[in-house]
Length: 243
Image (cartoon, rainbow, N blue to C red; front, side, top):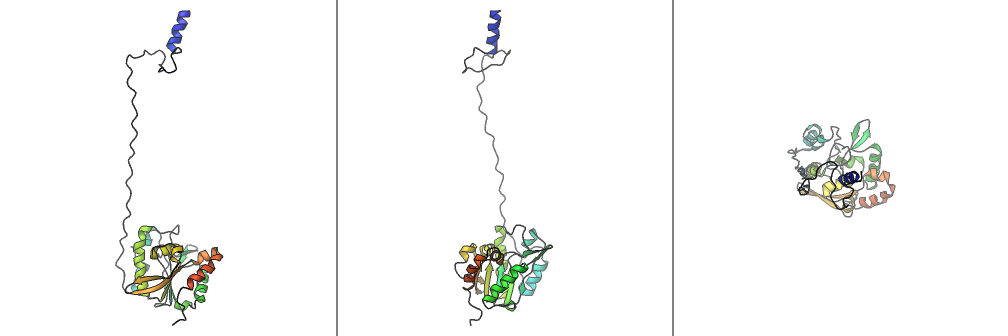
């Protein structure tokens, strides 16, 4: 009986030292243990990065009327990648001031316009404060369709900037007001705060037009304290009444 119990305990591995390798019950231990193999780490292949390709833009029309017609009807515009709804530029040619923002705005009921009515009213007041009425203004956006998230991928910026500079050359404004951070980045390569520090100049065709960057009316409505800063920006422009 005692011998039988001892054999059972030995078979169960109870008398093995804790440092010994355990053995399964009722299986004869092999004479030579295979060397423990270290598992090779799995090789993870890196997914190839999709290179951002430059946007191929069309040959731009050479007259303002043809340019607007092209914006209204072309299927190759960058904006067609994100929306079919458009808001075309409007205003007089050779205006005292051309106002440029990045994107049109959604006005409700699925419609879009350059500015929502509240933002347009505030913009009118800003322009009136420097002696400019609606008959002396041209309004435009860099992209003519609003994006879903209010952004434009930077791969599109060079082509959109080229198009806007061509647009400016066709309109021939005396002064330009650039609204918002995104517009400042696309046109001047600086964010809003950096671009606001000094008067800017936009080179187009063979001309140079003075410009300033300031807050979009939407931001001024949301944060009225910025109105004083916007007034400082507007004062950098040569006043309309000046010769």
